[in-house]
Length: 356
Image (tube, rainbow, N blue to C red):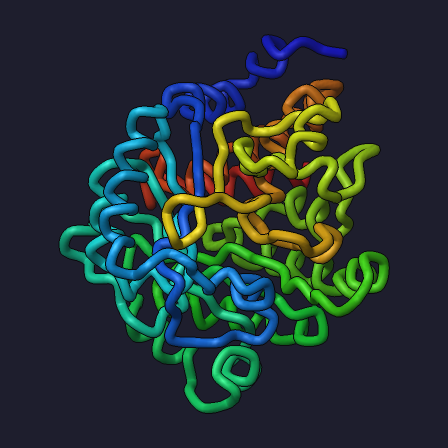
């Protein structure tokens, strides 16, 4: 095994690593900002597992939210992932998060999050395919949601499109990506989780998706926030000898009683992490699940964490270290933790590294 110092003798790798170190380590949580949503997307994990059901009296929610923010400031939280429900429906709460933490937010794009007051907030705008496919899965063919989102976030420096690819629609990838690029936005790929099929069948269906995304990265390297390594790990569900499962998931609520056995199994996890429900008091198993099998989870944020926390696995060779470092850097880049110079071609350089 070569040493970390030998890898960092490469000036470009040293620069990437130094920027990550300067930004600092993350003590992260996720919060469902609201239980309400103005859509019901087919297969959405939030509604599939009934996470929109809140026992708490609605009149007490604002108080509970304020108490949660105070608690997490005292705990030392410095990064919050905002999910839901639809966060754009509660700009008041979103503003409080923005004022107190580094953060990102995922939105369906239907209601624009205003620029004023949220100038530096990373926004992941959902799209699930080209116009017809997106409308089918997210609005039962009632509205062209992709077109609405494109108009809402045209040339918005905060926004990237968070493109959930459905395996049967891999042939639409280039068209969707090109429309996002022409709109002045970058693209991060997510991968559709089919809760009805088994692990092997669903993973096999992503092979063509993997190949097409790799091709798109080569065509548009300055606009794609997914690396070829990340694409390989998430579609195959493998990280070296590990297979993706609950036993290796790293974003688990550490105060959730049912996670005790997983936390003690020897695999690394994020010791600070909690995933808060929309009552702002209780936590659940992880970001995207309560009881469902993790075999069906293709969530990009969960898989980012899986790679990032397993740095030691990636130290055997320089190329393996590059795989880890570029994944780590991309996460920091996406979430505004690293200062961006839009003209420095950093994404092209990163994608080029992974081709060599």
